[in-house]
Image 1 (cartoon, helix red, strand yellow):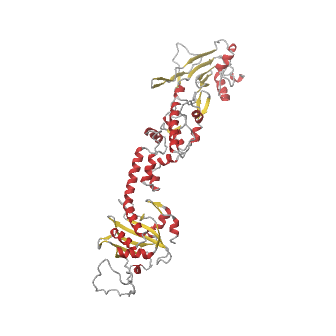
Image 2 (spheres, helix red, strand yellow):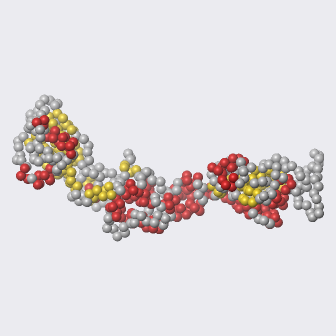
Image 3 (tube, helix red, strand yellow):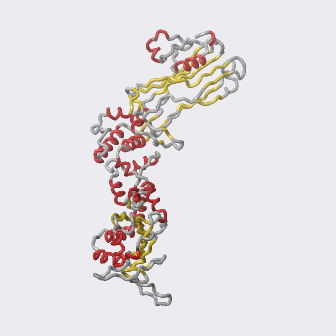
Length: 543
């Protein structure tokens, strides 16, 4: 092209022409370039790994034809390798108008140019030579078995003066290979272990991924929409309708399979398609979230029932999990179910006592309250119908509430406490005077306990929660609930009731401050726990 190319004694280049008629794909690429000048070890050989084709599906890739041509010149006026490098750097499309002419036409394919201008092709010259060959098919199929074929070229150095028949063997410079590479996904990047990485994507990113087709590049969404499949999916179903989403999921799976997409590409698109649906997100709830959010076994079972079984099989979930997507397999659900059942077993005794106690406390009839609570109480010392009563709520007149109601026309007269050497009072104790309750508490009867509850004028009751610090036990045995009081109650605003139980009976009841054992802060940090939700507004009414 210019005098600057007249500086080498010998130069050569290997050019590949790659075509795929089905995809209307055609390109050229430089395999290597070589130049040598007078003198030993005075040569330059350039070669690097390059992709001859874009990624394409295997069924389309088997139609790819690779031809190669070897150009060489022994004319010091022509530097083939120099032209190759300049032409490639300028446009990446190399074309020779004819062997030995030393002319590069930018922006045109050699084959196309020669076909249109056959008269320009020069006659062979002793100073120039060319060889053109076709490689065997890179991919071939036989039934369900595919074969990948590799071609290798030995590249030798040429000594000064050319190859001598009686001389030593030429020096092997290296080997050039043409081989197919297989990737497991057209839509995803592949990790070092060869598995596609489907994390941190979106439906739009996947839908607009370009795919090579006979009409050029087309994005995946267009490819699906243009499909001739009789069950073409609606990619924008009613996301709040489980059946509608599941039906279109099934159609999407069929269409993508019909289009030739493998399990990785199908399932990544289906995953992000379903991610717009709440039932899908519920089905794939993590075990950690199920535990921390205190999701009940009944709710978890309803989540599991919507498993998109008409669209997805167990293998699909396995593939999704392999690609790093957060989905629940059958074994995950089994484990979550076991954990949920253990959690339910932990809270079950507490919930049983809670239901019975709240029924008593909400009953407006004092007589009915006593008959209901009697079988719920028991102490080792005094038997059924008794309970150890403690007060850590402050002086709100609990002792007075334990006094029997005076008969008509009779006024209670305070009685002095017994002397130190007096015999012990039998339990349950009948308090006939305002006697301070000792710190360890006092065993009282069901009748006396009902008097206390009635006298407190309870207004609102929260549900019962496990008292903090019982983790690791097979089941909880201490609960606590909050209560507010009506105007005129001896205990303004309200407080907390702690109850300890065993074998289905309450053994101890203690009036506590809401801050006891950091219960108040635990409620603020975790409003819902163990199936009991207490809002911060309830706590505000106690302050």
